[in-house]
Length: 423
Image 1 (cartoon, rainbow, N blue to C red):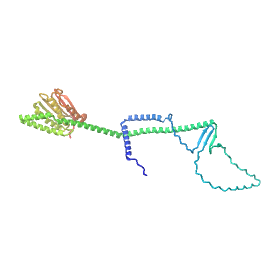
Image 2 (image 1 turned 30 degrees about the vertical axis):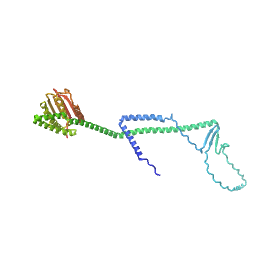
Image 3 (image 1 turned 90 degrees about the vertical axis):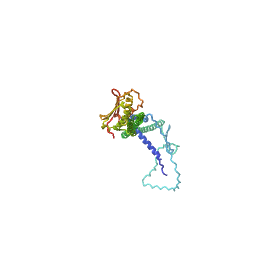
Image 4 (image 1 turned 45 degrees about the vertical axis):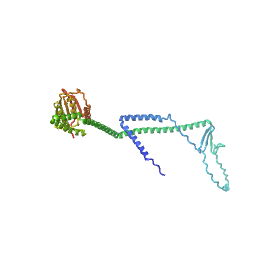
């Protein structure tokens, strides 16, 4: 008959449970600092010592020994007032053997006649040991007659000797159990120490990797959210600006066709610059591309505002290849015109400057409009906040947006990013 094998799923479940338990213990030990681990080890050893004294102290221990079943063939020793009685074990009855045929009696050999002058030897009689067998007792029972005081003392001495032997045996067992318990706690603490020392580096690396991946994923989501908000703002493209420009083109077609044609060309140039930028999800572009798009945007606005808008753009040719976040420059220009110049009856001047200082690219947009808080804004209020978020995500603390008041009026907005050539 073949031996039954344990089912493989049960073994796999037990192994998986053991692996999870070890992994959880290793993770917990790894997360502890060394001083916390040594504090835990000291407290564990102190608690083990207290528990050892409570569990294995011999004062309150009562040993329960099962009563041994006496065999009916064992002998019995009985103490009574008359003495000590011993009954030998009963022999197991053997099957009766067939009787042997009686042998014929042999005639005694005649004794040799004594020599002449010698005396005949006396007949030898075997000695009988002193009889301890009580008359009328069973076969083999021995009884020793003793005074009652001696019997009682002998019985008490035998019981005391048996109890002392049992107590010594219990102490030996408790000593062994106490040693095993203490050794188990010591080995457990040593195993935790080895786990922390050997597996701690791997667990810390895994935890750091998970933390880094979570931070990278969170940063990526924040960046995508910021880019989506910027693209949403870009997709709006100031609808009223486009409608007003198209209305101006329609009006100029009837009154001044050459000027309408020029405005239409500027609008086409602006859309050609803006639409690819809106479709492109690039995180960083170059300053020259942003400047061309802003230049087309300002050309349209200048046709609408005419002499009310004066533009001064100073972007060196060597900085056109510098890396710069997309649509930030246009957002700053739109804010300056919408909240500073367009609401001013006589208009004003807009200045755009780019320079490099301390290995940082600075792009400055200044106006001499109405300044802060003169007219309430009807916008979403997300422009400058979104620019700050994007700068922080792209460059950390190295990317900054500064807003300050201009003298005698207006606002100065400055973007600082690390200077590097766009790829």
